[in-house]
Image (tube, rainbow, N blue to C red; front, top):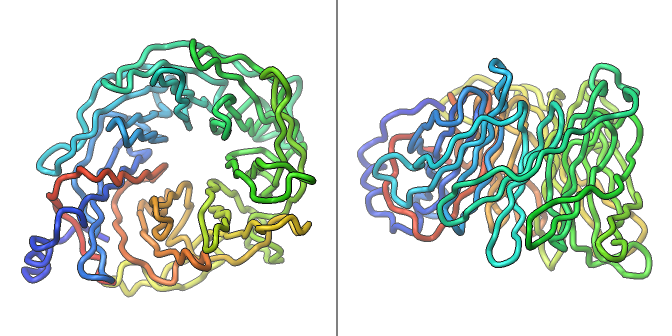
Length: 434
């Protein structure tokens, strides 16, 4: 949706909204090199307003990932650096008013090429470690001052493989695609798409030094991309209290693992207990080129949880309504898939629920708000962000498009900022009208 002026009645309504309703921001990175700050507010009980507050070029030329620390008001941006042969890491302090620029740059550093994902590890006495996955070669770590958002280099790890994987075009070298901290806050897990490995690192909470532990092998040729941990409610007798769900890009699979820990911080063991396609059991040729991207854990009623997976390059939905209510042009859309994690250990693994439209082409990333009732989808090829409602009782997504905005470039990541002390200003944008 293009940015247009608002009718006077809508502007008057916005002026009357209490500040607490305008306290939600989203930050969007794009391969165009931009970080776009969006403001999301409600008008009444059912209408949403999505406004463009600011555009920052401090992470150019190819902003690939955003990492937010809401508590300390820090934002870290990775630049993949396609044309220049190196990447970059930029930190910002988040400003808590919307009267001007929303991000104040702190530090910009050239780093090894192709950074694509990061995670923050919380160490002893309030210390922080930022771990960065570099798709072209390995892993770097950085000590962060959470007060100032300044950082210093700690360690570099260059990953290698013994031989190319089954997918020669994508597995000729190591390609780490994510870093995630485990629920015990002791380990980093790094899915390596090129090596068909989950690389494991122990983190010393005092020194923030990381040490490799034995890797976990996954199915050859599957190409692990992103994963998420789940503190299971299932019986301890069979699969343990912690589970890990992995999305593999090359095989379009979602695999569940039971997790156990070796003594004396010597490593993690993972045993697969369920696996299936990220689009369920549907037998449709449109999924021949499917490339799943992101996975997230989301709450449902009565203490349950579901998994949500974004599927790219498989336009299952044809000629659906445009997310922009003012645009009558029908669109094709890739999908979001949802899976229920059973509450009891009944042997069913995860249960495929349904597919819903992602709102356009190539949902590289999506994220949920704290309540889990809103899903923000970043559509790389469409250059769009779409906000969907999500029913926290059933987990169903997308019965209602709440707001959307276009013209953001090739969107790569999107993060929520629901800080309670945010200012009231709204900037210029579009009213979703839903």
